[in-house]
Figure (cartoon, one colour):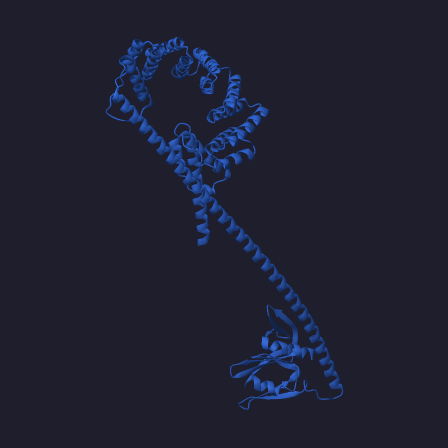
Length: 544
């Protein structure tokens, strides 16, 4: 009863845990887009992931990967997201939304593991499948993922192809200025200024209906102006910078962009050779102090430009500015080296962890392999043992059958002998009357053919015999050995056990139980044991 109560309680506990864990996973899925940090904390509260169905395990790892992505964390340790991908690819009916998420997260995982080719092949396979199904939403999602991946790995050709495909599918250039700007930058760094300007102008052309016009004002227009200046079209570049500065001054949201725009104009006028105009814009910038040595790229750009401008105006360098700049560069280099070293150490530890995990997995594999082989060995040994035992039982059954047949023949021969002896009025030892004498001179008169069995009980011997068709017993004070000597005149009465003598004429059947033998007696239905030491004697007596 206690065991049943314990089992029921355990089932209730596991059910409650499973229900609670499912709620935690659902909560995390709702949080992961806006609050990835809270989603990860919620997922860390799941305690019985191994007891959940595969669907919830897949949802758990997918939410975990989305949370890490939302926190801008590497997915290099989120290999379990491949379990989610496998589940949603093979689960029926197909959940297209979850499958798309799983593919995107798995692609990100491959990218973080420095396997961009695997990531690309996964997305291209998914894109081809979506095209066959005509699912426009999925097609757009996969094209975006492929374009982003191409930009990440600096594959300009693929980035151009997928960006153009995306803009064609999603209404021209509308709301995709970030891709156009990315292509412009890509072609610029590859030396194709013409292509770079073409994509910049396409991005600027979307300004009237762009979803995010601020992106164009803050990034696209200044980048285009800088390219023009670098190309030698300084006046045209200055016009674009002045246009951007004027726009920045009209809205509070652009106030942080004003210093960079002023700096760009000062730099452009200095390149043009107009030192006074360059100084005019330089004086508009906030004054830089030297009370700290924090590294800020924009700050040091201003310092370097100020040094060049001072030299152009006075013919002298400001030593303080040079020292500040050198100190900043040195700190930046030290920081990069520290980051690179920390990254290498992190990679080394991760590889050691992966190697340790691999060794552990191999050990587990070997353990389970040996366990399986051991179980097979036990099963085989048990099978052989049972087969041998069955064979022995069969042999024993055959032996018992033979012995019973011989016993019946022996009893029939003895019966015929009795009849012959009676008709010839001869005296047969097994038919005669005998008087047993005990140690105290007490006696029992027996008809030997009616004796069933004798049993030793302490200092007495109990004699069971058939009288007038009824089994009766009498006690005589004696040892069974003394009685056995007195009954030696009858070969049918033999010892089968240290406590029993039986009359083979009164044995109905020989029984075999386990590894022992028993004699079922007539008239009384008693079973008399045969000891191992007397088993051969009984068999020999029956055969003889």
